[in-house]
Length: 181
Image (tube, rainbow, N blue to C red):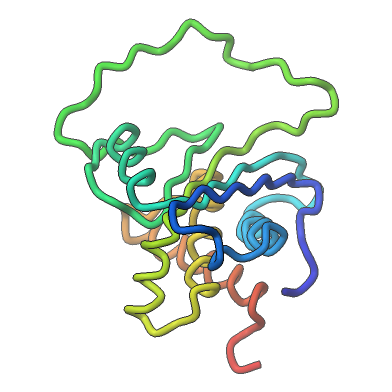
């Protein structure tokens, strides 16, 4: 992978899988893919932290049901610290806003949170197989996609979708090299 942008973005990677972690790329590779996604929309000196959980279908399905209202497995979920997500369920949950301060105090040496990304490794494997591409290519796309969601990018409208796909292509080109090289 080429040079690593956004070196001041801390990425913690955790893999929690029933069947082991043999297909999970190294944590530094995952972190670099996320940073390449973020580099498409953030200034080079940005400081922050992202957490990544690579897990199984059941965990992702549970999170998708609880936080999006969709009782199904998906490939990637993003929980942004600054941008709200989309509730997709048929009934909106009755969640009251907690009486918390709007700005949590952080220790002086703690970078501000950008959010959390959760990836279903089994779903990524199925998608890579269906598309006939290497698993790392599919995982890179999911990590970039999740990182862009953390920054508020979306794909519900045609213009949003095209803009997000352009950013994803640029990040993947940075990760794997430009097409034709």
